[in-house]
Image (cartoon, rainbow, N blue to C red):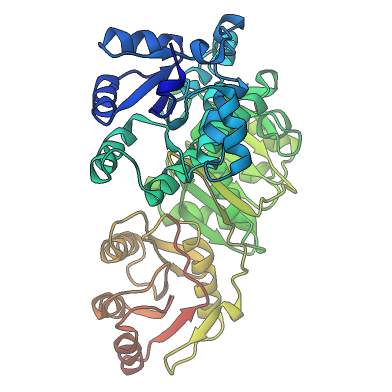
Length: 502
């Protein structure tokens, strides 16, 4: 029973779904003369561990109701947590409540995230914690006097701080925990928002996710509905298909000339611009026919019958074009699994977001145009005509490759691509290997998404007959590289921005 005599004691309010390490917490707090108040199930566990504990209802004189939905939402509990200890008015009012003063709040929330991916709607609803986030927010607001613990990982830092300060916590520690508490509740609310925002009746199940064992779906929006609006034929679309098409369209938007992009695992492997779309396709295919097998092919011009016949000679996963002749569609549909997408006038989003374990992160999309103003000549030899067009072409491709990335090109055709390497030298060697296998005697240009850190890469390019190089500045060896380019009469350009793609 709580009496007037023990009101001056230190109290910890504990309400935890995950009861691991509760014995460690309670034994430590008891050593520092804390007494315990807890919700029903937590209280029972604390008593089982051998500690004395008051149930919340003993303090509030109000039993939990609605099957436990309402336990701690009581003015006596929140008054004890929120009152300003230095306010005479608050102190006078608090004394009339005849309740203990809560100086420590220990909460961990219902595991909503674990249930949100299941099909049991009613159980998921019950996993939306109401009292827990409210208690966290209240104690965090009053961090000048109250310590907030909102996950098990904070038990050891709490114990250390109590030992350091002889049974109390310091203000700096409480403020840090308050910030973590508000972060916790905001992330928790975001999870609930995301779950409720997805209309289960307004989603389309995909063939599978990144791997066949992973389920996946796409929101059925009416603006860029890939499946119902754009798909003309072929098998069901998968998660990977959508990612590939999205990356391919972003790259295709860089080009005005008739252009074909062949893409594999989000990366272009063959790209060409030409005077007509058939020529662009054949040149893109020749760029790396081995990698093109089973790839995604995108066109920024209408596919006609003759081109459809050429496409049908090869195995591809997806064909994307802005338009198709009816005869072309009929030819392509003969391959029943070939996904055919007619995508035109699609709205390109201007921001990018990704959900991480630490929360959603956002960035502006890189929509800077790659043109002559994107380049600055830093060596003495200026390039003009086709070679200059080729370096712009190469930059438009390298912008959409996973870093580290290199593009070698000639006559608006990729000759060699190095992508996704953990160092730039290996990316360059991969690009040169492909170029020398298929286009050994061709003069070419080189675009790099990041700077070359050492002169060795420039030497390697020069020895392979590269005439124009573009890279961003920023290396401590920039001057050495520029001097070498001048000496070897290489046209070296610095780009306006880095084109790194993580």
